[in-house]
Every structure is written in C-alpha cells, then in structure tokens.
Length: 388
Image (tube, rainbow, N blue to C red; front, side):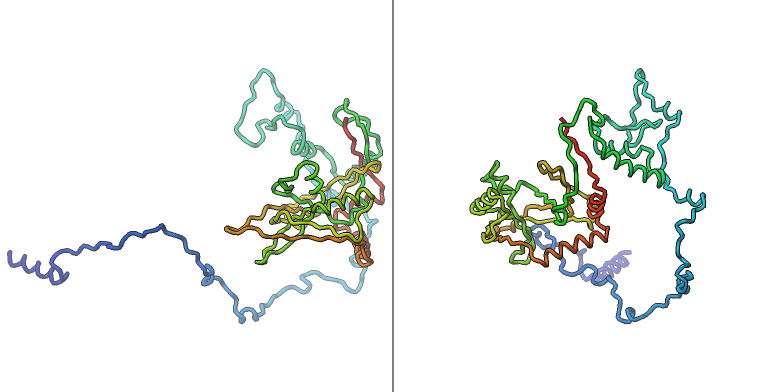
C-alpha cells in the first residue's frame, strides 16, 4: 500500500513540474487615474455598410409592364375624354360625392344622461377622456383657444356644396352690416369701427418675424432711448475666421440717430448722400422656418394708420435667434461696422417687382396672393370694433 502511494505522488510531481500547487496573483499596481472614454476616429459602419459595385450599377433590370399600364389612350380623337358639364350625375353618384360630416348626437337618451342633478354628487373618474353618459370633462375655463374651436366643430355646417356657397355669400352680407354691440355682451358697444384691408403698399415686400432669446437692448441704455435705438437696429448674416456663420445684430451710433431724427422731422426717408453707420452689438445663432418647413403656422400682423383704416400683411418667415456662445478661453473680438447708403430702386429692380406681382396673379399658389386678388376684386373689408 505504501509503495502505491509513493508511485502516485511521483506521477503527480512529474506532471506539474513543481512540488506544491502554484498560485497565480496579479502583481500589477492599480491604475493611478479614472478610466476615460477615447474618441473612436473611424466610421462605425465601415465594415458593415453595403456599397453597390460598378457591375451592379451597370446591370439593367427588366420591367415587364402592360402596354400603357393597361390604360387605352386615344391620341387621335381629342373629344374622347372631353367632359360635358351640362350632363347631370346620377343621384346615387351625387350621394357618393358628398362629404360625410358626423353630426353630434342629440337624442333624448343622451340628453337625459347629460343632466346635472344638484342633490347628487357627481362621480369623478380618473381619466383624461370624456366621463360616462356623454358628460364632458371640460373644466370651467376662459372661452378662448381650444374651447372655442370645439364649439365650432360641433356645429352642423357645410354639409354639401350648396351650403358652403351660401355660407361664403353670407360672409359678404355680414360684412356690410353695421356693428351696434358686442356679439355676446349686449352692454358693450363699439367706440370706433375700422375697416381691415390687405396692405396693398407693402404687400410685395417680404416680412419676417424675429424672436430673440433675451432683450437685445444695450444694458447702459433703457427707456425710450433704448426703444428708439432698437427700432433702427439691423441684422445681417456674417462669417467668422473659421468659416462659421452667425447673425450679427447692429445698433446705430449717435451720429446715425441724429441723422434719422433729422430725416423724420423733415419728412423724408433718407438723405441720398449721407452714410449711416451701425456698430455690431451682439452675435446670435439662428433657426429659420418658412412656409416650406414642416409644422409652420401662418402668421399675420396688423398696421393701424390714422384716418385710413387697418391693414394686414403676412409674416412669411420666422427667425429665432439664440445668443452665440464664445469658445472656452477666448473672447469675441468682432468689431465690425456696417455702413449703409440709401438709393432709389433702378429699372431692373422695379421690373422685377412688377413681374413678381404679375406672376403671382396668374399663379395662385401663394395664399397671400389669393387673399390680395379676392379683396381687390370684391372690395370686401372686415370690421374690427374698438371695444369700450
């Protein structure tokens, strides 16, 4: 038995090479700093992004389609597809072409459920939708905005084309009626009634709404002087030394303010030979939205002209300016000066404006143009009362 134990011991010694069991340990010191993320300079999709080869691009796939896409087109007789407007549609087809408008339910059962009993406590449900039995969960609020819009959606109007035409004609008749009192407050009467027209003089000039993230007025100037200075301010796109674009906000200097005041007192827009200097005051980053942008809402502004009425124009562009941050360790050293000199429009610029008006007149794609043409033809004006 002892001999066999020694044989097993020597076999284990030959197999491991050492007498005792080896213990491994990490003798490296701890990292003296916190781990950091290293920027990966390569494209993450460089090994998996698929790129078509030139052989695949040159290959032409065969498309087996029906001749003329299965539509028989007669190019010989032009009267084949001419529509006769005198032909009346079948009553069944006219019914299919009518717009489906779901009228609100006004049954006796729903009216019974909507009654409010004063001696019973109303059951409150934790829900953002309508309560049971058709009772709306609308709270007491000022009748503006969403609540007014909901009231209009509940009205049964514009069921067919004839009702739409009659509703449009009624607006012309309502515009000719005199306003004697408020439509919902009988005791409120108008002090002055002003007609509202499109701004025919300034309609050809595009207008933009500029929104600042903070007051752009200089800190050392406040009150009427600051308002007067901001009314003469100008913005202009610029580019720095690194090629980054930004918007510069220029304010007039004292000499320019004196010149503008002189022009206003003398009843002129500008002095032809004078130079108007503006000094940069702030730098902004910008975000521009126009009619082509998704989610853009149309905005209009009104101009009150003494003894002439009220005129409105469209804000085609909305510019939102946010203060531009200076880079770390550096200061903005921009000291730009904007020098303006006015002149009359030349013949080419006048022709461009006339051609723009004619082009918009024959291409009613712009909502502003449609409104202008309609008001010029019908000479129809709204009336806005000043409430006393």
